[in-house]
Image (cartoon, rainbow, N blue to C red; front, side, top):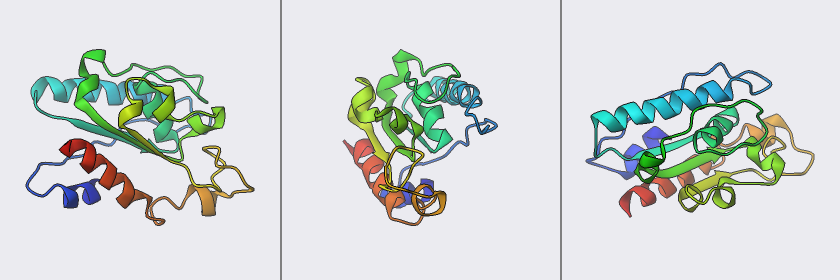
Length: 163
């Protein structure tokens, strides 16, 4: 998504950070991932007071994001959240195939703080995020990179950054 976002924000600096976590099958590593995300945001925010953040993730990365913004869903693990004092600097939250959907929730309605600046993508045949249908990993959960969701997400994030 970083390259798509760079194309939509010419003349602006756009960088990315790969959150460090083990991506365990049972999602037990999502909490440590949320801690890494939250600490990285706090560290960058301290060094760069004008930086604004677009955060998010795909699949278990969605759970990492959920925990970082204070939501608990399918994962029983915990991690550090983004400091409340930095919430206004997170201008967009974008997730793909977020397991939070399995509990019938999306960030948009589950978080009063981050919901208004969030966009969740869940394909109708993605059983990981509760999209319904018979679904399959190949058709539902693995197609976000090729089905137009990433450019839509970049449009959303760029709009949030420009508002």
